[in-house]
Image 1: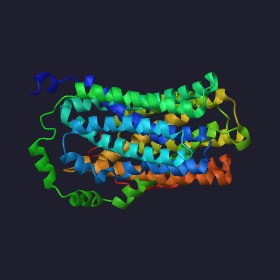
Image 2: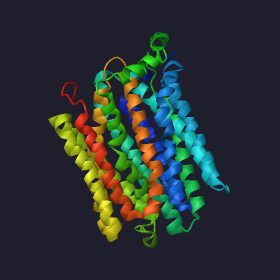
Image 3: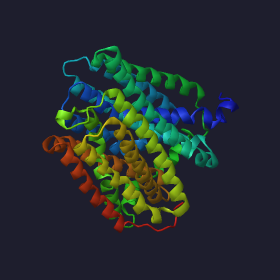
Image 4: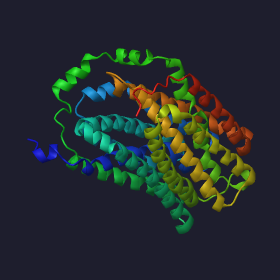
Length: 423
């Protein structure tokens, strides 16, 4: 029998770890993997095309989210996915030592992406079941902060650690990255044990009544309702194109920072990239997100979406400047930080709009559909970015990125942007 304390556990005891564990695999799979492959000598076009398809499970997660809803409990799914991530990180660490490690590790990271996307479904569902409506509102910003802290830990801390082991201690790069992935596996093992002990048991999690209600709604009707929205063509174009330029830039930015000057890059060390992009950059991203949320809350999305879109896209010019001027490290820090701050502003407006259009009876499923389409909008430009950069070089590539931001901004002209329903 479940004791009363476990049912009413303070959200502070599990929300931070729940969302730190959600962000950590996401950034390891989609961002840190890029640096791993770059360090281990994989060409840029293979890195960007291979790692971009790792977004696919997040694109398709809406297809198996009903199965997660009606099978077992969200709590059990969370714990099972923590275990799955431990296995994936351990196997990925060993795979780096194999002759054909690139293909094998990509397959393992793909499995990890499926595990992570399933964890996302379960964690977000558990959040709504375990917290009261008042606590859901209170912890909305807190869960985002811990998700972003995991980004700093992975793209800053883990990358810096791998760089330190190779550049300061002299450990072989393959061994250093295997040890780094091993550390990630240990962390997921800790989350597994902690969540097994600490997560509460919401009375509606997996209850027969909730399962029966979920099974009543045909999944096809949920999908159809989404595509019956007013101006759905404009909405889809916005979701797919708004971040098109940024999606190309984000896949290549760290490669640009790492590549030597003779290849057109800035020639930074792995430690420097961990600090510039993964620490100061992510801190700026968080500050941009917080600032963007406060501005939208005060003035509304309709009045702020255009300034936010400019904030997202104009700083891409900084990369054009860095590619042509090859500035010293002291200038790279503020330029990358400002670009990431603008990204935080623009991305916040984007996510608020996705929540705004996820209304009505199926709002949870519709939000999952929107984020799946969003992941598709990241996967496609990311997949071709490396090939384009290899053909034209870094300076012209970043110029092309700036021009590719224009179609996404133009879609804003056609969006339904009524103030009703906005915060």
